[in-house]
Image (cartoon, rainbow, N blue to C red):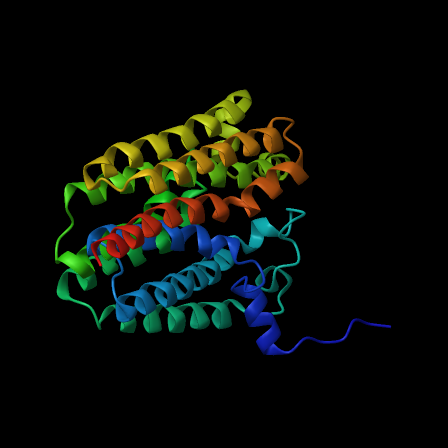
Length: 294
């Protein structure tokens, strides 16, 4: 018997990875962290809704563009061979149309903020579109992904303060190393397939130094954020959260040190907990400060 046909809705939800939230959560936590720092605490329900929904929509739109760009490569990779665009279940036109609609809705949310946030959203979209194609020419395309994901930090500060101060760029730099860490773990899953088809990734470029580099990336992320946020006197809650995030980094080393597909994929998939831990430290610090003031 042939497999039952799937509904368009089911295929679209598969295309945007609805059942795999790790990909948008790793974008969400640093964005919310920046939002809290920029607002000196809770940013209000309007901005919270704008950035949560906007992050989800833009990541979903990025999946549409990515799958179209990679459709000829994905059929040769075990993990991606069954993606809807790759199999032809969703046409290129359908995927791009859905991606455009999602991006427009996200832009509509940004329009409810201010001119600075709107201005920064334009290069954010352009870099997000460019990322899938960077794998053909750049040895570390994960850095381009980091630039795309990090625009949430920049736009958050712009939406709150109307400008992007130095601390935002330090957070941007630190978060770039976190993206390099978890997306190199992700690239390690597909390294054998990527070598065969000629895709460039950080896992291939780093070679036998991949595990050591990932550990270093985690350390740089936490150290840079710690130094950048020190003037905000967030207190022991933040530092305890940073210590917990560091412990998770050690756990990741145990998962990836043997370079198995399963271990590397688990490490990537649980990465959002590390970001959630850091955000909890920031939000918790502001909450305790507010409670003490009252």
